[in-house]
Image (tube, rainbow, N blue to C red):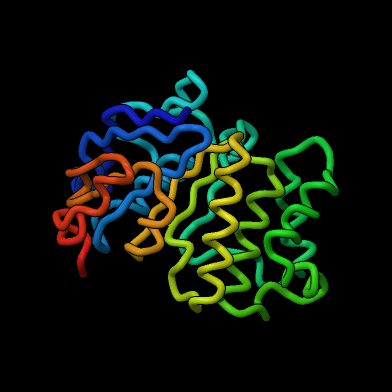
Length: 231
């Protein structure tokens, strides 16, 4: 389980996160909701090790990981799919996927086959450069690359952003399948309410760098939640 305990984060004099506490449990999808600029991406970057904390701690599998670098966290089973995807545009689809093996001691063909089962288009485009794919295909590639790492915690930052509806459905089915396997905790940041509602087991709503609401899936249907994330 991932446990986020009263973490704070500053950019200079500006405070971006304010005593944020949250859990993400194995076999569940935890969704963080909120308007633009409330600190959702900052939270995920802090979890992945890209931003140092000002206070609090991040505990993964019972260990404080505050001092670990991003690559050390990746070796501990934490995979981060950032907003904007950040695939390698000049590498082929196959080469992008192979970068995910950097955290493993061996290449696993079975993992790649599972990725191709979830996202068949990737197998059809193995020789194509990442930069030549559509936005939706790049998002599938970014998620596939993360899965090659065999993660036990998958962090996704707005996977539906700028994606056509048919691919959003494919991504939703893939995330639901990964939850059903039971060996992974999934932490999802999302603005698309219907997508979050259909997937989330638990949720938290952020405003101004703090969590102002949280609960289980039933509570996600409340009008208060909708009002707080409405753009």
